[in-house]
Length: 433
Image (cartoon, rainbow, N blue to C red; front, side, top):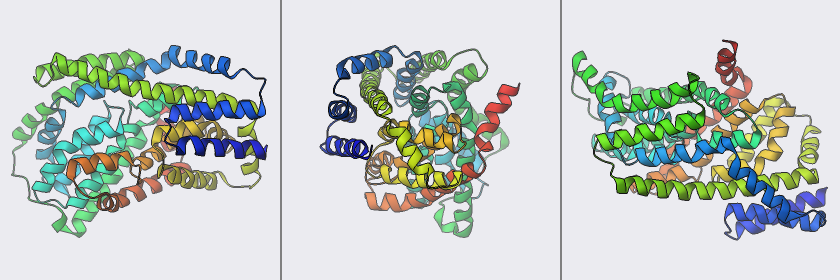
């Protein structure tokens, strides 16, 4: 078995290290393993079956719709509305407008399943505005990097959809389980910003002009379109009126209505958004095909059982196992993007977590958080690249600014490992009703 594991790692390193697309690299690894150790197994027939499973999976149908919704929202004035609608309410809060990035990303994440899209959409307004108003540049970019990752954790989430399909777990249950951790993580970011600002008032810029309560309520009308979208997408799912796929359809239609009403979206813009969404879905589809094919192959060869037995023989406690997996995923995050990390490691790490007493829903949220950490881990961290394009800062400076939020996320992972009820509380409460 050691020879099979060595071959798996060698083939994967060779193919992915050569610059080959992740999906093709995973397929090539699976074909190579079958050729070396199970030459009588029909690789082409197995690959065709997996391709059919990816295409006809009803759970995956929500994925292109949520991606399309994010592309359409990127072409609207949602980010401007977040700034004008929330600013009057933050005047007396410690940290003042520095919380705008966290609140904006949290609200936008509730209708967008993409971390990069959340970072880019919210950051293109808040980053420039806050820096121009005298807020510390590193505090602004760091909070944007950390809060932007909430696009994966707060539902709807494209990563959760992919995990749910691969782990054969309810996507709606995963969505519900992500709400409490997402809110708590956002609150942790805001707590850090408030403490830093209290200890060093020079980090925050000018005080926003005083506003009356009536003016604050009027400012909230700018959030109306976004709240309508949140109600349409999230409300229809959790109210039991729509499946995730149907809710995604509602989101696409409402986001188009918002864009046309704001006169920022044209027919040409819709076509461009659809084209970009199709390209993203094609890439994800190829990766999913490669991952499911390789998962089947390594399962047939008995690799997950072998590795699980080896690690269990070390006698680690459940929390220590999570610490080891956290370090493992952080290291992977320095050289791979989040989706690739999940699809390549899930067949091996999920059985380990379940053997340690964690269920699929808990492990799904854990994976989403560590993938978020990969989004802000150089040199591949995609959120860092997005922020670099927005601000023009060096990658080294952005990375240093992001470090406090990286440690907050690391501590949060340990907290949910010690108190798994943080994740299971809401799904169990809803199921109990």
